[in-house]
Image (cartoon, helix red, strand yellow):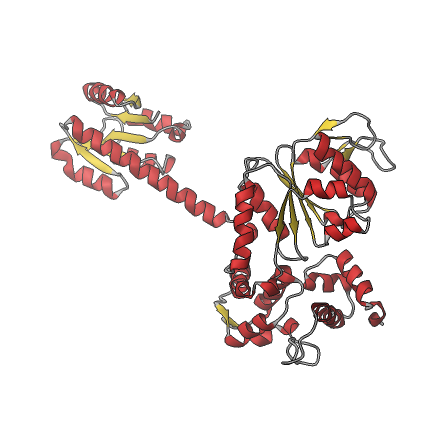
Length: 454
């Protein structure tokens, strides 16, 4: 119920207005002196009032002085001033000082109610506009999904369609294709959106650490366990847990995860007492899990439990329409962070972005654009600002016409080039490629690149 403050030195007017406004459903507080009104506002009353209706002339304080002070104490609260017929000039002055409107005594009830309702609506819109500006200023674009292609639209629409269910989802795609963004999209559009979203990369931890992170442990469970630690299943209670790179999970941890899905409980390390688990699982991997199952590296029963719904994300090279809008999106973000005036890309830069195969996908594109935003000295990013998209010899990355290469060859050549450019600095190379250090090590071994570091 909206609360109104009324201030006038004529008690009869206060009684008349209070009855009129209470019949309309408003809560009303009345004040005979301007000082009492200001004291109420100073005592946090400004947080509770929707409108102030005050006389422009009061015996204890000048009405305009009260108005100025009230506007400072409660800047979002509209003030309507009341004036006698001979005090119109004061009312006009009050409006100039920030009053929403004025009423001339004697006033019919329809006029009073109309001004009050208009002032309250004005406040509501002002608050909404402020909150919208605040949201835009705070806006975190890290979770925004940018695309133009029909190929990605199909995946996006399917994700929205299944988000409202509680089914487990398996997100497939190469490194850097946006698997975590899709997982967060599922969470934002699910009934669990008010609870926590938690992400765990299974490829970055050894088995014992992964198990501890996932299920938690009690004090003394192992050497170094000096206190109890909550696991991520508990952290995500009622929310969503993303298990990224689930294909790298060991058989022992796979067995425990299967129990979470089947029995809806788990047991922290160092205890035998199970705890209930209420989480939605989203698993993501860049591996062919069906092949991993066939070759005995991944449990078949867990695979089917995770694979209720499959979302297969296309690599960036298969959605070329999205390269330019994604590049512009990242450029605007980094330009804003750097406080630089960068408006876009010149034709050479756009051509180079379009021709490049992007083996590291969106993550690699983001890294390339960040570097370009830092290095460019002009309002348009040029081709020379994108040195990563050229081979060491200075020739463009794509294969010559009529010499189309297999994807594995392109990937091997690109990884070799990045390693060469970074002096075989694996951490930096992995960052440029948009993949984890562990994935890079696996690629180096797979492509026989280990001997090139010397």
